[in-house]
Length: 126
Image (tube, rainbow, N blue to C red; front, side):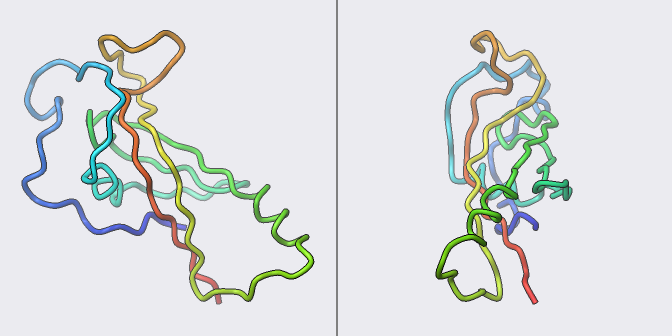
């Protein structure tokens, strides 16, 4: 599986680490460019799914986001009338920043800068 979105657009706003300013304050926020920038994330296969790794599109800090899909796959296989197999399977994955950088104003017990977005994972099937 791999993120399947267009390449990041030139001219998107610079992130804090590029401007030399401290970490972004925590804010629960999204923007269409976040999903576009997540297209560069590396999808590392794991036993139950994938881990998406890359820089957060908002704060630019390194992050990893696990996506487990083995439970869903086993449930789908037990359905009495399975859907015909598609050439490409797509899954929408809601993501949030999971960086470890301390962002000002972040609530206790949370990780990240507050950014969130959706990524579409595509799995080619024979």
